Length: 204
Image (cartoon, rainbow, N blue to C red; front, side, top):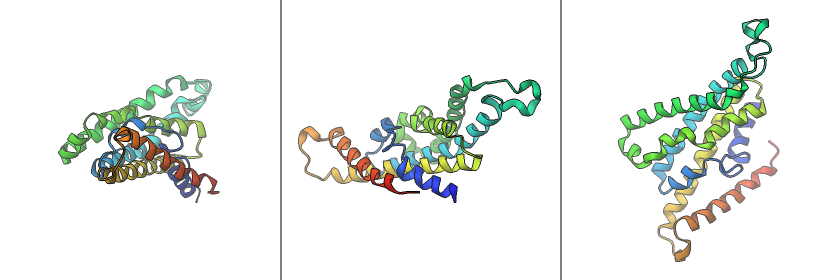
């Protein structure tokens, strides 16, 4: 039950885009059509689901103070947390490379439409933010960390899909010239964020 609550909360209340504004670069750049947005959203979700449990295990059994106690009493005082950021990014970059190869092989059109933003998932602050929030919140077990990664990924996916669908409709709308392009996109994003704020009052 706790895992379900965490998933729902990370989708609607602690949404990476609308609550923390993480991953805005690719969110704004790749949300011009639904198909491309869906591909990037699934890739982000996939990377979050796989990297968070791995980074959780590394954090709790290798990196943080006393994590190496399982090797013997002489390692109880070892603290490798200074390397956390470096290790987290290395794990994320490895899985992003895997995703890039799979997308290039099985969907060349999607790979071409995503362009530079697919490899840039490696430095997407929404994904790194997931690992850093995991570290900060000290989840009870690896299952909770995985649930948080899944919920955060789905939340980011819903956000970019929603914006992409709206932007496709806006192509046929009468928009004042100064607001065309990013101007109206910023306004829509702000309105969506206000909409998602309504979920913050729910006791999950």
